[in-house]
Image (cartoon, rainbow over all chains, first blue to last red):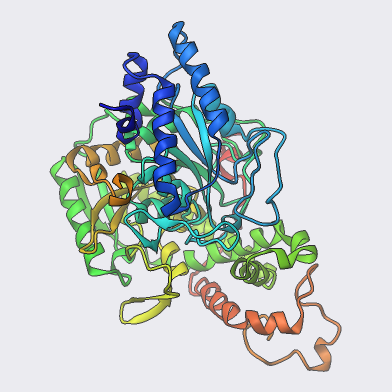
Length: 473
Length: 69
């Protein structure tokens, strides 16, 4: 294996080589930096590449490991951060012009924890402006392009993190998810994206989108790698008022639990909604695989999930408009046109609709809590379509044309509303070679179960081993 | 364009002097531009109306921490 090939290994494989001193952190990080040089001009997934500090950190990791101070599976591993996580001394733009010169004085809690685990931060990834959008089209830093077809969107808002993970320009990336912003680009980009339970991972030092819906989690090529990252970043943080005191298990150990007898259920409303036939076919094939692994797969109906769209809209739009209120008054011209319009629309939502939304949220949380006493996980396609073209404003679905942004988020936002963990795992490709995502949601604080099902699925399939041509070029 | 996506109301004497947009005042030009987006948003919001909420109270933001304390 050449140094150039190191970036094509999974995080877990790289960690094994580093632990056994068959490869050094410097070699792994250099391999990733070379991949960024080769590939990122075609995808635009990074806003800032931290080349010098990454190499310095890699040399420090190499020295530590050389004297026997190995910290664990993230030691010397190159990780990318969505550019809304504070990085001390390194600008943090949130994909915006307004914060284009913002240089934080501290690291976000998740960045502190990654560094403590020995991870090497290689850069800050591109995103939808202020994480308020599902496409990662960006008027200030350029659009993120899909590795499987650079003429198509990769989804968002954590699009740069997905494109970088998919194209071997990092071994893992962090994203944030307010309505699907980890899982959407994971599905369209063909990687694993995990949104943990609300409160499981600290939001301190992440530029907010909507406080009560924001979640932080990993994007990786495998569920096993996501388990490694989640184990490092999860846990109580007194700096986050929503942080949970719930103990953190070892998610890597939890991957190996028994699967037989697990009860899974397909959420009927999200497969009878208009869905591209090829997406539906891949999803149905994934259910067959899960059954073959010893799990039962029923179908259940929860008609009230239709109200989740309205509730999520009211809460998201109101909270994000509240966060941006001062800048809307004083610096409105500095927003991109699309995000500015959506922010201003949030100003018009009635307080009564916000409160109604919180009541709907309570009702749905109760219903899904009961449902997940009878079933271990809920399944459906993460997104009803594969990646749309960058140059098309709308997409054909169910016999009508719809704006592409809202279609992306249609099935993901429910689990931001109720705060339960959810993961998207690659489950196939359509006839154009575009990835499809399988969405798995579980009860609060059972991320280990979601990861275990996703890991078992990946052990039985090889979708996650396919490499986009742009990454080899 | 009022909150409910139609053209009624803004010129009536009863509404004169009201600021519909809270701390940020949107110009007539901006409101006209936002109209299609607001109509789509409004349609989404109204999807909550068919749900029977009964005595359900609003959720609080810090739901999990509250359960543990």
